[in-house]
Amino acid sequence: MKLLEGKTALITGAARGIGRAIAIRFAEAGANVAFIVRKVDENMQSAEAEIAAFGVKVKPYVSDAADFEATHKTVAQIKEDFGSIDILVNNAGITRDGLMMRMTEEQWDSVIYVNLKSAFNFTHAVTPIMMRQKSGSIINLSSVVGISGNAGQANYSASKAGVIGLTKSMAKEIGSRGVRVNAIAPGFIDTDMTGALSDEVRKEWAKQIPLRRAGTAREVADVAMFLGSDISTYVSGQVINVCGGMGA
Image (cartoon, rainbow, N blue to C red; front, side, top):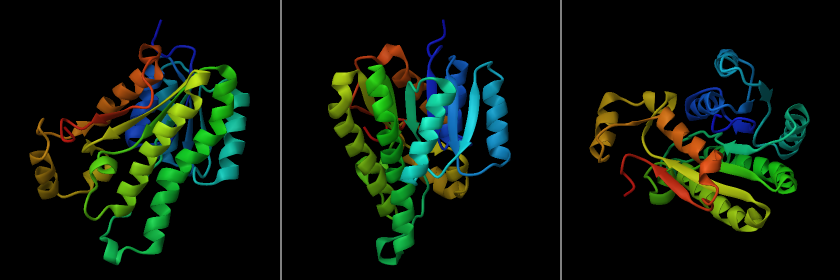
């Protein structure tokens, strides 16, 4: 039997990057996958096809993760379509980098809304379902900069620190109902977002990493699979760094 066979996973921001890698890893492990996208495009369609190739049930849902009412309607539809929601991965995220003295209100608000409010929205919508099931795993994607901070990323760091606070608080709130809540804090991971950086910047990053390389989205996905599966049933309220030793 595969590690996630019979489970349904709901993943936000799964059309590309880390979210997509998690969706594919979960499907490979036997999970049915409902994933949230902001729009219908080639990324959504190719992700759906790649997930479906593993023979699991998959369905994309177009929804604004930062919209409270839209989120609740989407989650209700997923519950109706799949019958259960066993794993929630709050992965949706954006960056709008800039020094604080030059940062606009829009840069601040957009990052907080997409990165933090979306995690609140989906956690709020999924919690009653998991509590009734008396089981579930919520996995929040934070970042090492949510722990250490980073110049030029006050908005992003604040949002990811907020995700950690949300994780630890929810683990205490709903643990008695058999629902686990954990966070993953990736370091420098090879994605479209980091791929836009210059070679010089990437080399400087690598110098700060004890393993001397960027991580892969698959390596983050493997940790998510651990947290979503029944081999982590006594792990809750934790922040697992996937950073090549950078946060040690």
